[in-house]
Amino acid sequence: MRAELQGIIDLGRMATTPAELQVRRARDGDLPEMARIHHASFPSIMMTMEERISYFRNDPRLRLEDHWVCERKGRLVGMFALYNFRMQRGRTAIPVGGIGMVAVAPEARRQRIAYWMMLRAVQIMEQNNVPLSSLYPFSHGFYHKLGWGVIGKTNLFRFPPGTLPGHPERVNVEPVRTYEDQTGVMSCYERFSSEMNGLLVREEPVWFERIFKSQLCYAYRNAKGETEGYLVFQYRPLPYAEHLTAVDVKVHDFVWLTDAALRGLIGFLAAQSDQARAVIVCDQTDLPFEHIVTDPMMSGGKNNWDFGSETAWVGSGLMGRIINLRRTLTAARLGPGTGRITFELMDDLNPVNEEPLTVDFEAGKASFPKATSGGILWKCDVAVMSSIWWGALKLPEAKHLGLVKLEGEGDIAFISKLFSLPKPMCNDYF
Ligand SMILES: CC(C)(COP(=O)(O)OP(=O)(O)OC[C@H]1O[C@@H](n2cnc3c(N)ncnc32)[C@H](O)[C@@H]1OP(=O)(O)O)[C@@H](O)C(=O)NCCC(=O)NCCS
Image (cartoon, rainbow, N blue to C red):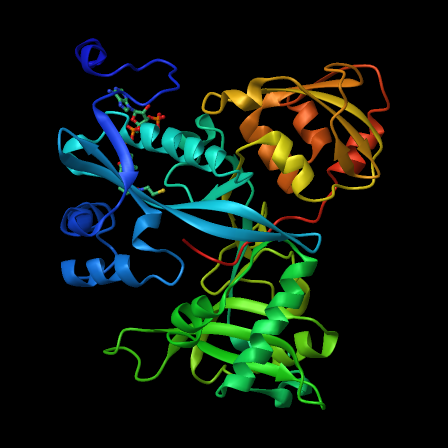
């Protein structure tokens, strides 16, 4: 099979898309075929063909031309979307190319169409000076080979609300109804995200179309009426035949700026215990729920000697990629390290990253000396470099595991300071 295919596709390392494939921006006439490929690839999204077409036209985060299609001999065989996101890091908003809706027509699968589309996506971002990219993978291994590294880690808690403390501050939690309430929530997220590492900047249409229209939002307000925290959640009703009103509460945003707001929001969730069977929180902030609930046992969890009570499930989610190392290192200040590093990255999709790059760091700020060597020599692949830059993988562990090789002269301790960042998080799905 492999030998047969070798004639029509090059299975080796390659840097240019084969001439018979054209990856271009989507246009109106592509919509029916895009809907067909989308339907075949994401059948669990319950939408008719017309609804899929309207979704392509009306997503507040994407214009039709932000969708890219892959054409072979005049027929569409694949597509993906390229979002123009900005992520927060140290009070700087950095452009990030979000990749979503990667889909290949069933008749064209396993012919490296996805591979070539991702190669093209990297080239587009490089041409547009976008330093970074992120995506939610169907397979981490597939995207790791293409240079994306794991950056997301989530603890999924699912506990009966009655095991949460009913803090009295909950009386200050109220529904978000008016435009003024909504503005309070938006600026609360803005303040919260600017202190964090990795959260996306959310424009107003995203709030209105994806959050306020379709989800429930309750905010904690202080005595002056200022929003200090909020919850965005959805009810997941249980089968009607078995339960009349019972639901699970799936929390999407759990944002708090003050201790009172944190307690208020927890108390609010606790008070749902008569209706809600379970509260589901996907936490990326390492909030110690095992210390918050009266019994750290998941709803339906197991208890055994090795494990104790089953408290949460751990998931690896989002992946991130450095599209261009030089631009990334200047996009935001790093930790307070001072010294010289020469990076030698391996990057199959972007040859620019494979050129050795010597960088002087002065209190976390990068500059590029004329010399092209010196200091500590750092060798790794771009996926590992990406996980380290995001703060998801710590340098000592990467070194112990042989994922990064450090050689040469210099004070290695400063590198750990450079990349010692808060754990990254992202609360938006795409
Ligand atoms: C996932 C999906 C996009 C992959 O598309 P694809 O074009 O078939 O993918 P590729 O051919 O580039 O690669 C798929 C795998 O097949 C392998 N492959 C591709 N062509 C091959 C060939 N001729 N011989 C052997 N292996 C081959 C690739 O190396 C890759 O293997 P790996 O995962 O071990 O690296 C496609 O199956 C799809 O649309 N699925 C449904 C939607 C979905 O999951 N989307 C992804 C959201 S992130």
